[in-house]
Image (cartoon, rainbow, N blue to C red; front, side, top):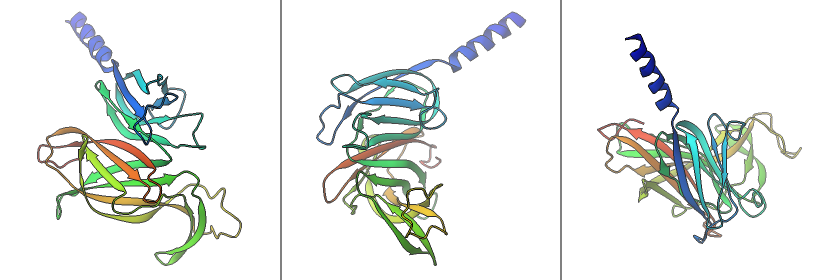
Length: 250
């Protein structure tokens, strides 16, 4: 009996540390493959020593064998062009417990720190919060928010109601509303001396409300795609969430 128990514990340990395969294709704003891209799978936080790194081939395809589990993020960009002609694609709070395909597109816009949650009453809707960031659009200013003056580092693209596209499992969502708010950041480094930073430093973020479709229980993928209304440049981000049999949960 002890031998069987030991074997059982070994099998459980082996299964819990099984590797899965995540693959996909990376494209630019025109849908053309990005031949020079780097893909990082980050367990605890951004890029660390335990991140798994693979590169795309000349057709924008990548494939990675990673330990199954909950991942803080997946980060995809062209390391040579990052900050020059392009930003990156992010996936946040990913439940990577089975092999799957994650396709990505990026340009000069970034959907940073995407999170989602469900309305459990009052409206059959879901919400997504994220920080929209654009390359080479930097403006520092003081703004009056909730009765106090805050320092704002604004690098947002031009956004209107047509700029925000939501998808669950690649099926389009109906955008009901969106609002701007401000996310307090940890550092005021880089702000000009004439900007008052005594009440903290912030970056603009968006809370978008989508009509929630009928959902079966289990895991789903929310994707947000942004388009700059003045330039047509784009950015994408994804996150995973789980719903119960009534379509609620998260």
